[in-house]
Image: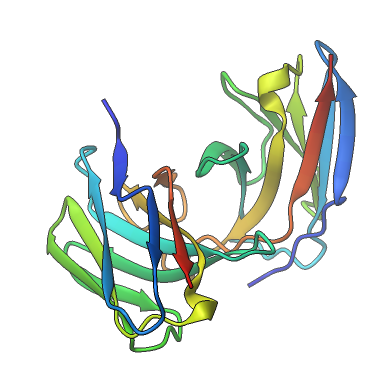
Length: 114
Length: 111
């Protein structure tokens, strides 16, 4: 039973295309996140949703639009893909957004923009 | 957000204890100390967290200095599977739950 799953695992696309990454958690958590890990391996928060409401938007370009249809899903749609968007994107969830709650991460989606 | 400092890399022998240090001299009274690790080609994984007292769980122990300006993650018997990047992260009540990752410590475990 995968707690946090992401699809697809790999995504190769050309500049200018629009793509989506899907995330689902079966832990019954209220809070979900998207993180980006760049080529230098730095992990950075992008977005956070709590009960389907946006909590964190870390100055991410508006080409990135998260969508949470329900508490168990947080999808990431990216318009007009650029070379710099190539990275590994991780979805995570936690029971609540408080500091004592651990976050569970998905396996990541490796996005390559050519 | 308070900053943490960790060594870039450490080595250990299999089945020996490993002590991973973290300095956080600007820690505030409400900052929790969290440790996550990232195994190769996987997402980060929660290890342990604490506020003031030392903590133990099935994965590791966390030793927190009395002044809280440093902490040490202890793996009691390193295995090859423990080779990963270990991140020491401070979280306070105002940070809306986000994790702020630094460069972490890359742990190599030799057989």
